[in-house]
Image 1 (tube, helix red, strand yellow):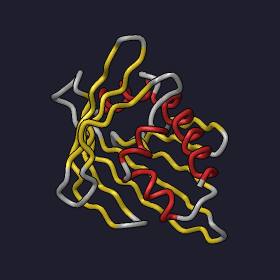
Image 2: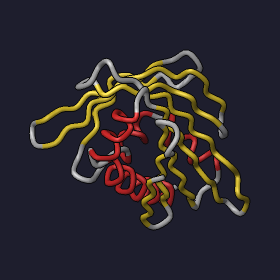
Image 3: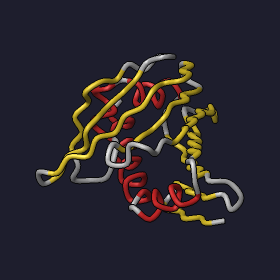
Image 4: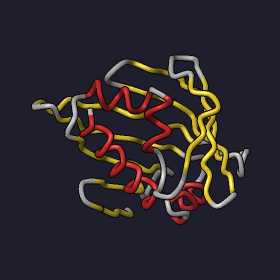
Length: 161
């Protein structure tokens, strides 16, 4: 099992399945954390590593909806897309995730929001990839940096209200 921890973020690769599980707590209630994941204007502000800008081309965050965004830096663009399989306000988002540079690869992601009380939320994001090579490619490609820097920006966004 591979595990890295930065501040409160825990990223774990399962040794027996091509799964990555990310766990992070936020100083905000579930409805605010959920909104930050479903409102495209908010998503564009925090998702991804520092220095990247996001352009949301589509963000229809409802059961059966779909999404596409482009991350940009220094004239380079990276497209991502997927579908929302199940969306339950303040508790669950199940979606697919594809990096357009590897269009044959797709991950199934489940984001669970847990109310910890006192205005705090635990987010557990589980990504199932179609192979160990794909999962390990995620991890080797700087996923931890993007997750940690993105969640730091999300902390700031949630603190602003």
